[in-house]
Amino acid sequence: MKYLIAILGLLVVFALAFVGSNNKRKIRYRPLIIMIVLQAILAYALLNTSIGSFLIKGFSSVFDKLLAYAAEGVNFVFGGLANEGQAPFFLTVLLPIIFISVLIGILQYTRILPFIIKYIGLVLSKINGMGKLESYNAVASAILGQSEVFISVKKQIGLLPKHRLYTLCASAMSTVSMSIVGAYMTMIDPKYVVTALVLNLFGGFIIVSILNPYEVSKEEDFLEVQEEEKQSFFEMLGEYIMDGFKVAITVAAMLIGFVALIAMINGIFDGIFGISFQELLGYIFAPFAFMMGVPWKEAVEAGSIMATKMVSNEFVAMLELGKHTAMSARANGIVSIFLVSFANFSSIGIIAGAVKGLHEKQGNVVARFGLKLLYGATLVSVLSATIAGLFL
Image 1: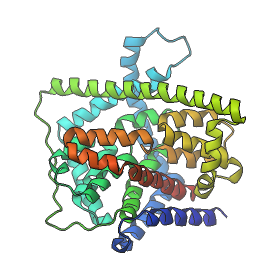
Image 2 (image 1 turned 60 degrees about the horizontal axis):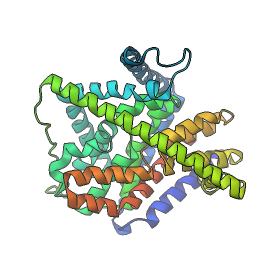
Image 3 (image 1 turned 30 degrees about the vertical axis):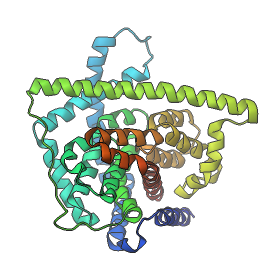
């Protein structure tokens, strides 16, 4: 039965993408089929094989050690502030982002990261049939983050037509930054984080290839990565430490605002209608949760968490998921994979602002197709969760 529901879910996702396509005649189906098969193979390997378990365990253990190292710095500054046996979210989940940011800075400084990103992108471009720039950007987004990635391609921003700019922005919204992956792993099962990272990379190309199909000629297929201004090693460290701190503070501020706002709206709805706002959204999103593979009896509960992510962000939704301890392992896994992306309303402003900071005209272009960005990125999350649901 779950396979029939999964097939229905995939058909709905592709139908919704097809309806929103800006050029249905240019859709190339061969790369789509290849990437869907790759998604299924990778999902099976990561979720149902000993090799996949070994890789996920290894990836998770690396982040466990990094978070432990980060805790040394946090405890040095904030030791004794928290009550014994209690671990404030800001200290244990958000502040370690600073240390991960520093490591990314070191890998950038030593040119290891740009080398890895560039050549993985080149390999992907052979699979997805898209340009080298698009493939580079997708990999870079998953490591550098949805706003920082545009700095590395800022020379090209002003030269890109609208359709290529959309693809770059959609990749940025469909993935997550490596600097906050460790934070996710403290909130949901690491195997779902890793699976989502891999599936979203291909899912982004699949959905964009339907929503926004085009071909890139050899003349247009340029890949010139912006080199950062040469700094001393310690200047770089200081910059990435502050960048990581800004991310942690920004996430904390958004959590305070969104959690409080949702609590107020829930209270208003509960007082007037006898049902919370999140429960109401749960009924709206329940059919999508069911098509992703969530059992119908848990679909409203799952739909509520999915909606919370879209109207706030993935951190708020992950905190909400943690409260649903009675949810089945299958439903928990599917929802967890759906949550691992930047597909929410606030990301529209973040991405448009990042591009506008580099090129004002192109930033305005991004703002105009912002809702379509969210539409596409949400379909990517649904697609990844549906594929994973086949093997949970």
